[in-house]
Amino acid sequence: MKTQRNQRRIVAAAVCAALTLGLAGGAYAQASDVTGGTTTDESSAGNANGGGLPQIQHQGDVSFVSGGVGLDESKALQQAQSQWPLSMRFTGPGSDFLADVHVRIVDAHDGNVLTATSRGPYMLVRLRPGRYTVHAQYKDNDQTKAVTIPAKGTAKAAFYWNTQ
Image (tube, rainbow, N blue to C red; front, top):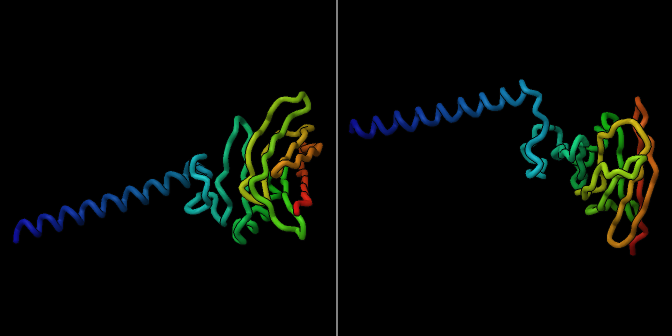
């Protein structure tokens, strides 16, 4: 009887400690301005960006996010466009949304800035102001667009593939 009471107390203490650590960890993440999770977690579930925005990923000093397959994610990405210097959209016939678009962005000196695959029809990229060339490939079809990122404001690039 005494052993059962001790076991219950130990279990209760362990649960209490786990909850306290969980809450403290969440408070720390909020206080330290942590955005997103790791770049290995590519889902939007449980993501600190909130509002359905997919994980923010980093490549060098460039940040990017892509997705928009689901309605929540699509709306979140569209609403976030004004906070990102470059927003891209990938569509096909009948305004069908496309995913798995291979994107390569090079600067004015032909230096590779970003190489990534879009997980959905929207990709937002945080770039420094300047001139860039975006190379987008869907299946075997390549497209290239020149974009200029202004010091203030945003740039948009829409890619359309007539795939049948």
